[in-house]
Length: 385
Image 1 (spheres, helix red, strand yellow):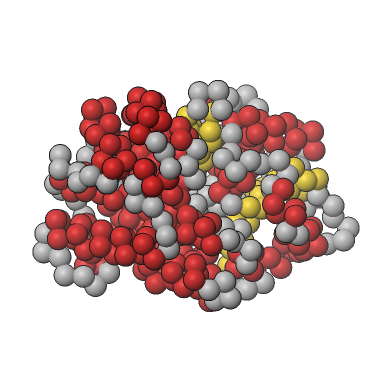
Image 2: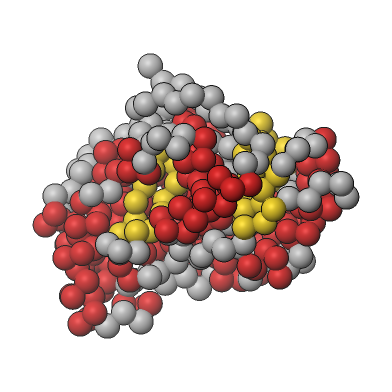
């Protein structure tokens, strides 16, 4: 038995106008300093109405930490909001989701949150407003936070982390820099591929995965190349949320387990980390058999009679796209020295081995294989095991 989960989603031009209908009594806005500087936080306040003044927490860091999340929860406890509005990219959304959960369930500790438990209905609502087109965090039931003390990423899952309402307004993506467009777009692609080929794929998520992948492959390059191509940006914004729904109702897999650890240990932005690790994880998975890469390649219009052929078609598409948008294909290209890599390798392996996404991958590597995968990704070597 499975279930399909989705918040109410408002999308398209002028979607922000729906905020005026909510009329919150005591709202809190969770965001970061960039959203304040760009004037986006003021846009949210203006849409709420002149008689409603939210309290603003704008301290979310680019790689969201457990410590920041705890401060955001303390802020909510002081303000006692009936509505929390999360404005920003995946970092802001993940902090707001977990802080909201802890605010609603003060007796539950962060490391006790589980998707296998049921919690009381919330008294407040969370409205998620994404400003980047990648993480899908606005619709997911998970969040990824960094523990600064242990230098590892902690993944939290619970159905109660899913926002009440999501506003996908393309006007909020206008200030995304080119590198961020590339990084977040690669994240969309990785979500689509892993949700379709992972162990928890299902009939309901498959269509979302394929459509998100089709949109990203068609519009990411256009969005990256031309800042005035508003149509491409709107399609990518939609693709991010669609892929987010796909992973919410299936999951991600090995590539993300490898990327989470890589990002946490070597301070690499998530989109670049997953862009590097995804092709190597795909090859490793196909080498074990029982995969769906040929089927996915055919969904994109390619001829693939075997899993190896399907993998080759998909990797060719990814390599061409990543080259176009100047994404690195190896860890070495990120400027990580061989000495730094070797010193970090035990931590990289340990972090990946503890990642929840190993539970949802078709072929689960042991620690030796995890190390070999990282070595392949460092030097661009073929995964032949």
